[in-house]
Length: 391
Ligand SMILES: [Zn+2]
Image (cartoon, rainbow, N blue to C red):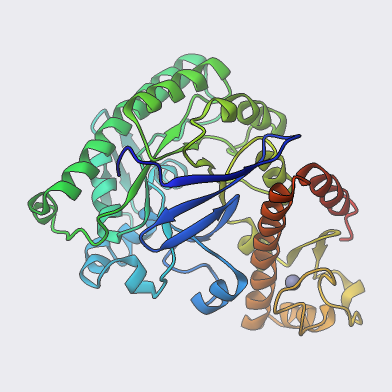
């Protein structure tokens, strides 16, 4: 964490706000715009690390909340950190745990200090604060650490949104202080029972403010004053109208520091990601490619395809003939459907691999188009393909 930017901008598209860049970490570089497959419990569901590497994943996301509860951050720390534990040598971003605490837990007690909650696994009581969240993320040794925030519930009144963003602001300051303490003095970490395994962790602050544009601005100004290595937009994709989400992103993205990565949390569909790249967002994460894969929904260049559909019974074509993934190179729709309908494990593996590959390839095509100055043409043509919808 420092004043030097970990982000190099490479190219800006001329007719849109889209941009390409490179984020540099101790575990390698991430070319942006980038999609981060979600590795909730130290695994991107259904995929081996080798499959992720071969599919071109340059960074994955780990969930602080889940890893804290099981197997525990101290255990992972003793085993050398999350990279070594899961045998993933490329960059990792960890979330703060805030979103899960606020979305998974009915029973929670929020105070200035932090939030008390009960484990969704066994009902045991735990406490998460900015300091605790940062300790966990330091124990995991992720390359990008997220400040602990309150994900403002939706809908929120203006007063609720103000209170929430101010709390997030105070927690952001405490998060930064804690990470700096841990990195500067090993004794601090020892007292928390952890060893710092990655001295070069970057810290991102999280913008809140619900759908109130002036509150979003106020939140961003507060974060920039504290100073972070990157800035995330949080509290979206939580039930608001899509138009409201894009209103916030189109308003706030251009105000975010140009020399820092911009991360739109928890978004989204291919259409949403293309729309947000168009507005200057650099990083994304979403469970959609893997979750939908397990439900038989596949993303293709001609829209979504539901492999459960009887029409694929005798279909010898690949899932998507325009896709370059290992699944489309080898297997037919009929075979993937058969595996899915039989409840075979391989069915979920192949659908997950295709969907994650589809997302990663889409990002790669966007980066190339931005570099060539043809992003507008690319996105128009890609979106019209998606809109064809083949079910
Ligand atoms: Zn494919």
